[in-house]
Each structure stands twice: as structure tokens, then as C-alpha cells.
Length: 139
Image (tube, rainbow, N blue to C red):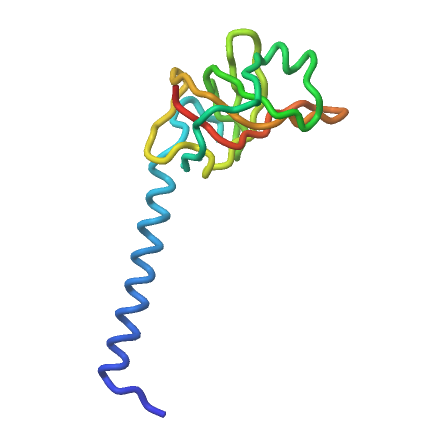
């Protein structure tokens, strides 16, 4: 079975369109996220209404937090430590946080001076404590 010139043009047009669409989406993902100090690259907004999860401090969370405890932290992301790892500071202490690229708000630049709210859960094991972030909101 041979393709007619019209079929070949259609197939090429579809392939080029798909490639351009993928490039646009990939470019958009790199144009947002944390832009402050970094040792290592971070996009989607979610629910922002009332919550039964309490705002807490890093000091309180480190001292009394339970593994898998949901919490809200308010402060600044002060450094990017490679991959999805960052250091967060709220004035009472610092904690290592894990933030996936798609958890940053779309279209908003965040640096080490930007006040943010992190929603997530504490990940405590025998050797380390980390806050696993579900969403980032600029305050």
C-alpha cells in the first residue's frame, strides 16, 4: 500500500503539530517555580479555601509532629538543595522540604524573599525529618 502525497502531508502536519505542542508544554514547566538560591529546577494551583489543618511552626512540628501529620507552614523557601529538595525557614527554625515541580503555583516566580504557605505532611523516620509538600501558595 503506497501513500498518496496528500496522506504524507497530513501525517507530517500531525507529527509537527504534536512536537510543537509538547515543546510548548515543556517550556511552560521550566518558566515557573522557585528562582532563589540553588545547589541543583522547579507549577499548579489547587484548593485555597478554609481548612481544618492548623497552621503550625517549624519549631512546633520538629518538637511534637507525628509521622504523616498534615500541617500548614508559613515562611520562606530559602534554598534549593537539588532535585525536589529545598530548605524552608519560618523564623522559628528550618526544615528540609520536598516539593514536586507541579506543586509550585503556575506562572508565579518564587525566590528566597517570597512569603509562601506550604501544605503537606511530616515525613518522620528514624534518621531524618522532612516535610512533604502537596501545594505551595504565595502569600
